[in-house]
Length: 137
Image 1 (cartoon, rainbow, N blue to C red):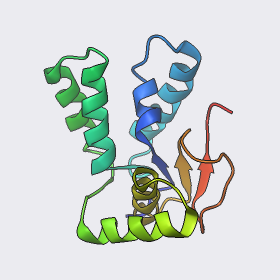
Image 2: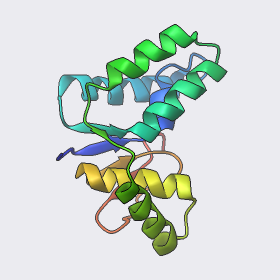
Image 3: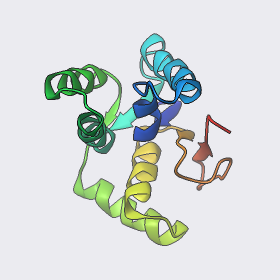
Image 4: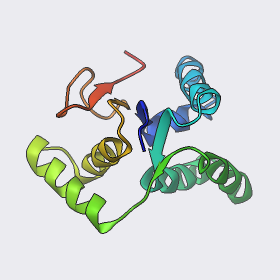
């Protein structure tokens, strides 16, 4: 896998958020890039799981949330694995971030992405070759 960028769950969720129109517009452009340039935008099983749960919390039906998640499986997807967990634990220790953020960082690294698009980590920070970009800054 050699993606250019990795999208965190929060970015995908904003694409479905009618209450945040400015963030939704930005997120929709990023999601569109994922569809128009196949292979360039990666996600992980963790992102898909979080996406499904959070869509449901926002009132999206289980059937619709499932359809959205299944559609996204056509993108490059980093699988949950013991190796990814171990890499995430290493990222957590190295950078002093939460396990969940560390797993996202480990998945971004595993995808080959040099950019992690998220609002959960420090914008512009380079995490050993993976640079965080907050598209809402």
